Image (cartoon, rainbow, N blue to C red; front, side, top):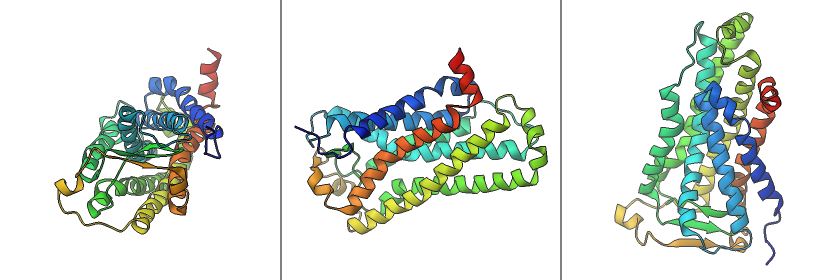
Length: 296
């Protein structure tokens, strides 16, 4: 049976390339150890891998054929939705610390790891409170996490990308201000740091700014879609929310494609990680340190 997805097989190819583009620069970033950058690559790469596999298995159906995989992949999708902006926050905070102080100690920052990894895990745990059933399967898209459209869901899950994006925006604004004030000392400040050079610093700044410009408006748009598409339900109790929790909602493409807001939400969710992977590689895959690694 031919795939109903008009982007098939183009999308799986791009999603797979997204995985590869995140894996290629990972070794030397691990060696230099910027926890925010490494976490960004890990979250984006995992997200692209999940979307690649889903786009192949459910290209022409909405059958619950691999429930265990859906349990795992839906949690990765949830985690990446918070993990990517959390990683960007770590990058923004690190850039601000570098430009705003004369001496910077680049070590394994436990605070950044707690934000980039610990916070998404915490949100995954909290999301169980507003998870009404096991998961959903959209034809062409694949497994998707389920969230009960009730007020607590916005505080436990939906707010995090926007909140993290806003904090990153504050750090980036402070970084740009410090950069302008201390622009004549910029090379001198970075010369005391072997882990980062001016070119890499500016590329990280561009990456953070691009991600922030995407995260905040998209996060707000997702909240708008949820409020507009499905009436806000009252929170009654744990038992009410989790009644018949083991069920799986199966949604054929003809159903979700008939709703423009659903189309927009799913297409943004599937293409944004791929775009992030390509942007990251464009900024770092052709840099001097990358070319040195390729020649080895």
